[in-house]
Image (cartoon, rainbow, N blue to C red; front, side):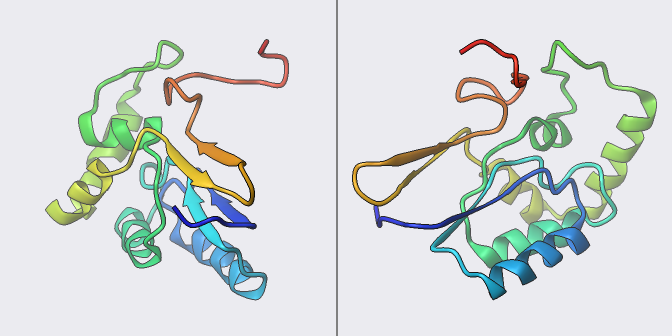
Length: 143
């Protein structure tokens, strides 16, 4: 595993490729050694297929987010939320824009990603918590 000094972290794109491209433009001006996506990449916005295409082009590791898993399965895994009919309609619309290859790509998102930083420092990347993408962590959440 190659060591990196500067890591770019992107997350919660939610199908907004215009916003993702704006962030990537910034990263081209101020490059990083590695890029990682912390999930919730596709579901909820107007450009799910375009976001998948961009992530493919980037070739960066992508963590599975709760919205990514939900768009694939439709299963409510979070004890904190219940799916509304409107959310299901958006999910179905998103799925209608994705190819079988896109879905396969999303299925390849990982629960966690670990990067070796300089020295003996390792960065554990996840969505929610290391044990569940459904975990909610706030400023006042105890260690």
